Length: 273
Image (cartoon, rainbow, N blue to C red; front, side, top):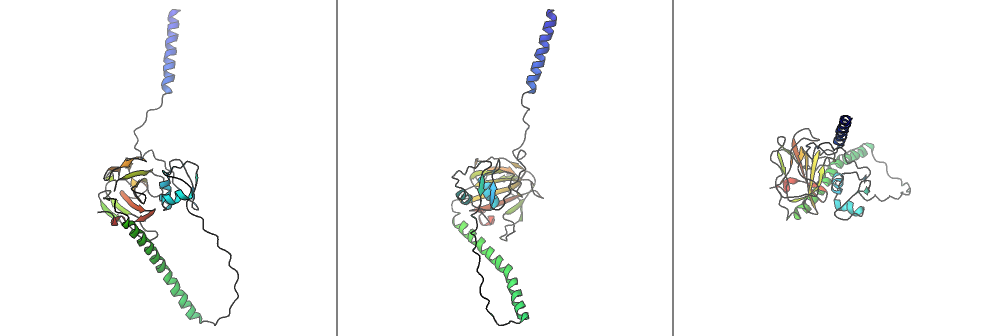
């Protein structure tokens, strides 16, 4: 009888130990930070956005091409710009409503030759694209000039070695940075000392992205990385390795490098040695 009781006790011990081992957390697999990032993308509609888990105000401002301070002021958010999931943000001031124009009296004018009128209209239409392009270039030049005047204390350096395969364009749909091509795993370094204000993959078209803040006016961005080696709020030194080159959300292995001044992309070549 005693032998039977001993056998039953042993069975219970084995059963209990088996149950307790199944309740232990599974071992943590060795994942890089980039592997664990969410595939969710920031999508902005009608200059409004609802904050999702993992968002930062800097990432939202970067997506909207606006200065983070402008969005913070519109939403009464104070530094260090903490936001919360579910929070609704306004990204731009609503446009003022235009008053309905009152009908004017029809004034009779002399008839104009149809051929002459059509020629004038054709010339006017041809001038419009050139005028728009000129205005766009003038605006970009003003931002670049203002940026260069305030660039004094930032010592910029190249973020990676490789071949430049795309250059900055001031056109509306142009490439807003430099594309530096090299092999997978090439070191990506901080172009200047700063703080990591975003490290993730929620920005459409940028893949695994790092955004560094260097001053109140300047940010730099490092896109399409294979591995991210820094986390948000981490301070980095100029030249410190922050990522490894990759091809996330891209067709080739290369780094997309941007510099932004007050939310607007500027030509990195004007700052790099």
